Image (cartoon, rainbow, N blue to C red):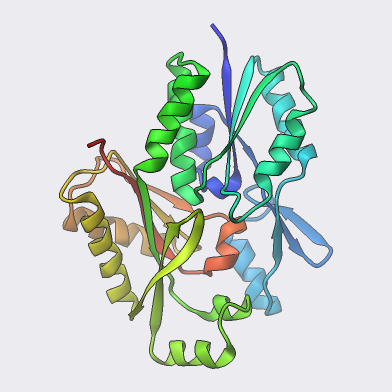
Length: 285
């Protein structure tokens, strides 16, 4: 039987223990503070990221993994006995990661390597990799694995509430005046994944109302159904994430297990510390 390895970059927000359990290889997004470069999920996490941002008063830049990093990951998978590889990359709308993975595949012309532009980010991307890994473990073919991942990708939504507009202003996405007004009015933007990007959906006043609105949006999307899978995504806000998980359980039908995961530094530089949201897979119609 062909052994197919599943891979994703760290913008998939996959919990480390789950990725290891399912045998998903992860390739880190790079974070740059001047001359200092870090690998997301390896030597920097969301908490350390924002400690440095708040200390230095400016945001780092991010970059896609180099083709070399993907080539090394492919080599690890092959050395572990893989006959083929499927790599699920963050949306090409936000990153050159997919291109790096494609270039790296040229190092292995005799290996069946499929690179997927998920057109997703964070756990919607992660859920595609999870579905692929579960299918691969069950002995599915490449075509069957891709079909399973595609089905999940089309049924996954994400809604998240920012706790502050401070970091949007630091990144130039708000003027100082607009940020000041938003802070004064306690505006909390709500984000969703739209057209392959993390995009502004609504502006709600106060954190409490914003998180309640995220629950309303989740309810509306599910239409009374219980999601197949659900994950709380947060940025250096673990206690708030745990409290939000309980709010969800009290407000709508939920699966028995609700994971909590970090957004990951490759994405959290754009959302800011304190973000809390939910990603979920709707049942098939």
